[in-house]
Image (cartoon, rainbow, N blue to C red; front, side):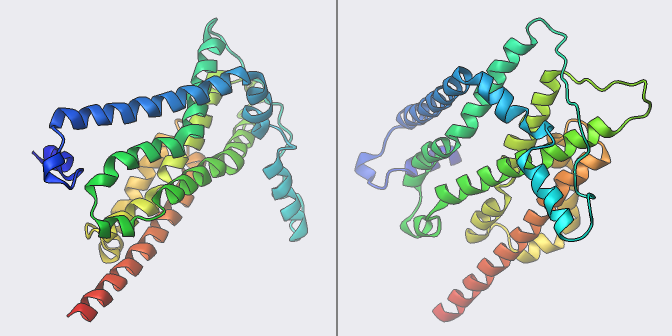
Length: 284
């Protein structure tokens, strides 16, 4: 019944209320258009797959990668020498399955298509939900598409420019013995890259989600502070999901930004709560 009530709210004119099946049809077309957008993005990525693999996918494995050079220059400028400089890495990848590269190319294309089409996908979702919101709720969610997209791409860029080169450099330079040669599969590298870009981008939506929940009164800053320890456990679980190889280094480098986002969410929720209390006092 709750789902039916939501669909009925989407049209504010009682005389023009759509039947339940019509709402499902409307939702189906939103999904179809989103899928088409992903497919179009995937086709573009697939056409330029050679460039994408050589110049984008493998770029974080090189010592001349832009963030590696920036960190090295930063360390030298603040007087700590080459401490932040990445060690030389000869990253080679192996593919033992005959169909490995073929399947990986499609995986890369569709994940790339999803990242490219993300703002449009959310816009389609927002078009479906928007008619069910009141004018007051719409006013409070103004600019939501921009902020969702900004947070998503910030997470993707953070994962690509910071997390990925750090993890590649750490794993390729960590050796138990000189007789052990590190040569992971290309599929393994692609899987880790997907988790540390698209996965981080999705988790970066935390402050916006908390802002929406705070505005509709579901969570408060006091509530988030009270259950901070529980949140840390949830963040660790999320970090473990993002990083398939759950070693302390990977967990730490993913957990830190997620925890900072949680603290930012507390600040956002607290400000919204204070504003709501002020409005209530003025109304009283």
